[in-house]
Image (cartoon, rainbow over all chains, first blue to last red; front, side, top):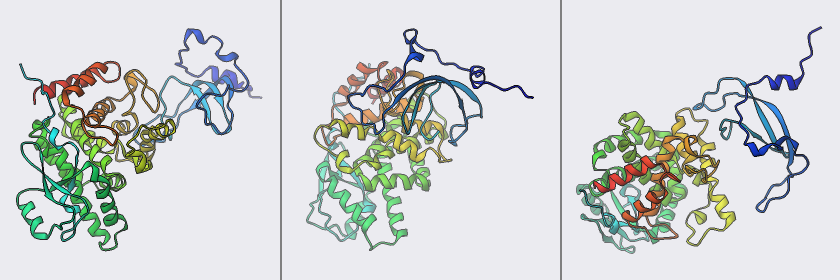
Length: 95
Length: 323
């Protein structure tokens, strides 16, 4: 019987170049809804979701070739329609 | 030691926007005064709004090499309405005639920015290249289609992008870029850099008062909107797309839309940022008058290394001192 792979182990094995600031020690401890912000026009509430995750690249823009590969990112928060995460590389709209 | 100019050599023509002769149909009164550029700088009233310009007048202008007249900044909306009536709503012209007319208009206004300004401003050294470039750009149908949208949507934005393309070309050359293909790509990127503004209402683009916070937020969407419009196009390279997406980013990360800074901003976008602001502050805008070139250089020098790239500001400053 093939060995069952644990998702956390797979993610942990991925390359990751994120360097967290020293004072972000409690990054992964956050949970629950985000507090409202002054100029917030969001339609859906956002919730902290702090965990490592896998990001898979696929090239979508003709002028920006992206070789297919995977890397580790850190999830930050989610809402019904979007997700925020930390990554060491700039991503662009429509990617 | 070269002398620092105390005023813009083109100062007297500020407050006017160029209009291509090709966009004016003979035999009609247009509802806006037409001016002719004089050398040295200055504007001469050519025809009052209530008097028509006939074919003989056009022939005479063309025989003198005049391909653009000018309208005052206050009349630019009247001209934009005329252009819209003629090119968008008008049924008198066939699609082919409209295209030919627009192509001629693009050539004239691009020439005005890229070539005609050169003897009195900072692009003397590039005028030959500019002339070839105008011909090359006018053969690029995809580019023409994009800038026509902007021309009919907001005429001021159109003249702004043609000026920015001239400044980008000059700055790029001063930075040591001499490959003609690369320079042409930079000019095309500059012509497209504000293409996202076609999603913004002209009333917002030409508002004379201070923008409210929601209006500012709406205005700040144009780099991303432009990028999203163009990013799947196979005929544009990454540098050109970054000129569209990042021309409002600043070195210190306090720009928009992504608040990136330093090396995360593409070098062409850094050139475009300087050219964009330089044209914005040295041209009349709906909300303020133009400032003098020495004041503009002072503005950049106070912000170099913080908002704008030091080397590019140095090039701009040195270009101004040598013209």
